Image 1: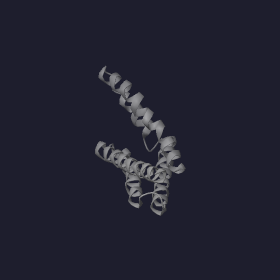
Image 2: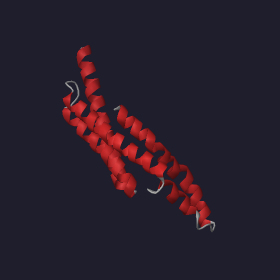
Image 3: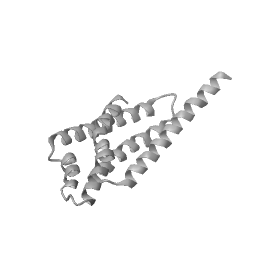
Image 4: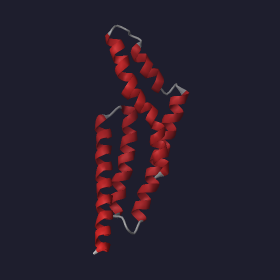
Amino acid sequence: MMLTIVGVGLFLPFAGIFAFVAPIAGRAYLNGDANAIKIIADSVAVSNSSALLFAGLAGVLSVIGSILFGSAIWQSQRLPKWSGVPYFLAILLSFLSAPFFSFILGFLGGVLLLISGVWIAASVLGSKNATMN
């Protein structure tokens, strides 16, 4: 789980670029500055070594972490085995959607993460209530 958290943390600068810089660059472009879009393209391009390092490391750590965490859930005696599968797929789809700017893959990853989280939480709460009775 820690690898996934570190990987997502390394991806946050890209989220910041898209969340905060893109609207400003878009307004500048609409106001006639044709080079404004190049700001975003240059900051997230593969030719930018910092961007490549952060994105590559974020993707690798997140996917490896989700594989390990999903297998830990699978091997756990207290959590439902199959709840680890949507967790792994959620992280994988979320990071696959980033290079392709695919809203559908990112949304599907979010839905799978929600399903996995609710499933795990319901299982934990159910077992907690069963031990209290």
